[in-house]
Image (cartoon, rainbow, N blue to C red; front, side, top):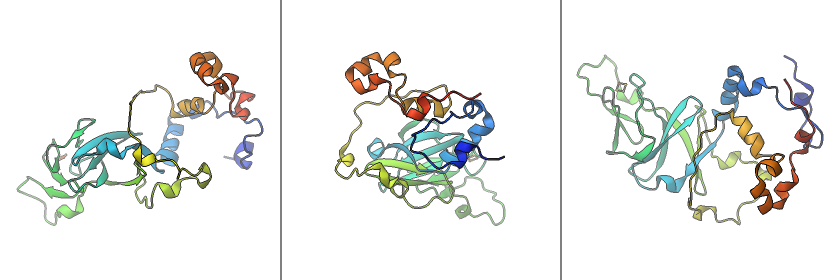
Length: 240
Ligand code: FES
């Protein structure tokens, strides 16, 4: 398939009108899978604050696309992330969304294989194991984890290396003057959005709708009431 004109053209600083994505980008399953593979399964993702898992044995689960990930603080204080999947028959290991592990082992609820908090398989109850079976060959699938100034990131790419910080856009500004490590969560609001993820971010990143939809906010922050947006989207028609 030939790239469209806007795909060929270099980034224009949003100084000219660009069409929106085609509607299939928001509902088509293949497009969604492509988003997952190209973005969500490849990049460092901010998932929580370090303080959210402050105590040893604290854990929390995160859903990224079809992937169920468990992040925990082990008994030495180290944060670790794994696919929440047993290496035996693929059962879900941690069933609750967050909490504190009851032991220094993660034991599968299905046939009781047990893993250390480092992800190593340490116990298999079966008396008859196949020849050549070596527990060392069956650790949990590890997920790369990186902490930057109190923010916890994971990266689902199999060979992910480096740090979240190394992936930041240097042009995004110098945050050195901000005491980010000292931030604490004051309030948490969780919401499930019944829409394609891009719908949310596009609306978040522009305020064309603010004067009409967020009247109180626009009164509080007058710039929002001016209906400003990425200008390219303001005049551009939707595509089918
Ligand atoms: S699926 Fe986990 S022990 Fe069998």
